[in-house]
Length: 145
Image (tube, rainbow, N blue to C red; front, side):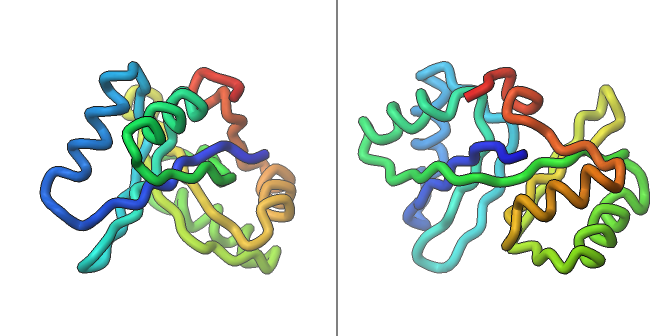
């Protein structure tokens, strides 16, 4: 099961991140999770938001380059070994992790891991078979889109 993630390309300059998050906030788009990777010249901001279509529309109106792509989100217990359990399943399936990031929901004691895989369908199947919860879009965003 895949969810939509936005990848936004930013110049590595002061204020660019504030600009993008301000645009989204003003439009009523809620950021559920994020990761930022950078080089000396540019960065890639990866976001899980409550409304991907609205976010893309408003960002493009402001000339912000963004792309929606599929990622896989899984739920694990927020305790030592939680991530290792997931990675062992992926390793045994021969699935490569291209990148990942995580966030926790402290009220429930659960963590969500966002993955980009070389074979997302195989990864989701093997994770589900191992009893690891794979999220649908609505689980993380409250929106089926």
